[in-house]
Length: 496
Image (cartoon, rainbow, N blue to C red; front, side, top):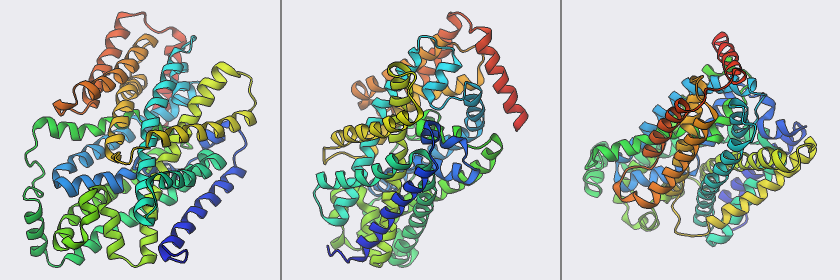
């Protein structure tokens, strides 16, 4: 590819713009609170779009369209489950978590919050939650590395190994420089880029196919059951797809956006903006994969790459149907999806290592400047680990995301919900739920994957039950713990 290729130029413009935003955010980052939580200063618009962009990673433009292209509308149950789960998360968790984390000694991270919420003097919750974050985010970050590598590999014809390092460097640069503010500001821009690409591509693909009758005939020829949203799916398969929605309650990189909102009053507007953005993006991703079935059936001579790897369907449609300058903008949206999620994940991992382990156990009196620089070093270390995990060229984006999503959803989801609604919950119950959720997901994934039941279902249910049973069988929390809960609950009710 020529160095003056329009697509390459637009890509480079995008990457340079992200790094410049990182440099600007660097000037606004004065302490560790700014670096990992932006000083709790995000308005409703930035809160909504940054939460959406950090949620919808490369799987939105690669994994989901690929699944739809391969199986038809039956894969759309994932999108339906995600919409329901995200709405409930905004409604039930967002505002309460914003208030509770501030009341709980201004907690900056989830392990911080758990430690204060349950008066964990021995910091057992901090250790276990930090370890869970590191384990599952290593897998999640690997999915981002794979998605970025697929993009660079497909677009520039480079080797998979080189592609991984280039996509990683693009993200690491602005995370290390600007921290949370850089991520939030770039996420807002990236969210706009993503929705532009996801709405434009399926529309242009549909118009390129021709009339509706031809479109229907082509899809029915290529995938006879593509229009059937049930198809041959069992009840278990439908529930497993919709169960993706359960994961929202425990995703640290999404929950941290709620914690960073400037006030509870910003949440309702953020919910409306975020849900509108999400529904349009998911509809676009489903449309791109579905219309891609008809387009490549109509043009089989162009389908070689997609036949080999369905997760490239969005990229291939873009490269075929658009002017090279527009291709550069639209494919930058894939990089935006990858970078927005990967950057937040790297920062959450960094905060777990820095705030919860380094400051908590190694250097309790570390200065703010020292913590910021340790955080930057941790970003680099985690990125290298994720690159190592993503080293297999046969890795599938959706598969890696599904595993990490289930891990967080089961380990933290029930814990977050009950900690915000149930005063009687105690330290022992919290620890039991966290461990049971994580262990069941890992065990189910490795021992019972053939059942077709998504591992988040048994993990979430058993973790929820464990918290309630263990809390009731052990000593009730002391008045300090219940007092802080009541204060936060009262403040939340006064603010809505």
